[in-house]
Image (cartoon, rainbow, N blue to C red; front, side, top):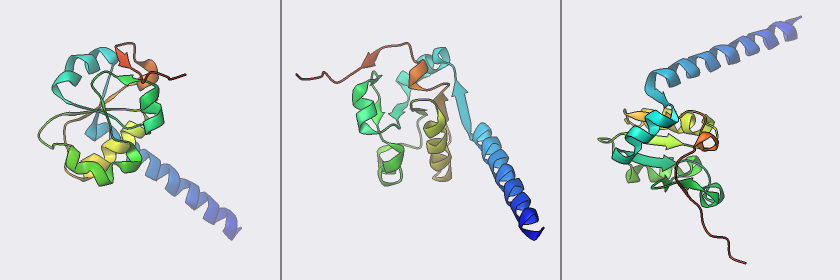
Length: 130
């Protein structure tokens, strides 16, 4: 019986944590449609938070690759006084990156709804050598 109560308390705590994190994310992060993203990303810091292999496979023209796995070490590459436009493959990693950036004092945080897989604009891909 005690194990069941402990398990239920653990599940409730996880749900509360997830809801809190989601609400925090909604407060600090602007989720933009592709059209809204296009309107502002040229005047912002455009950051692809995917891993280098994904970035080389294709990325939004003008984006810099700062993988979420390297974000903490590379914060000095981002300015706090300019908007930051983030994207990843589907939107999950860019949301996590926004939480990290917000903790470090970045405020104007935006990400692409649905991520790169929903992007229909210009892309750049590394040419494959045969």
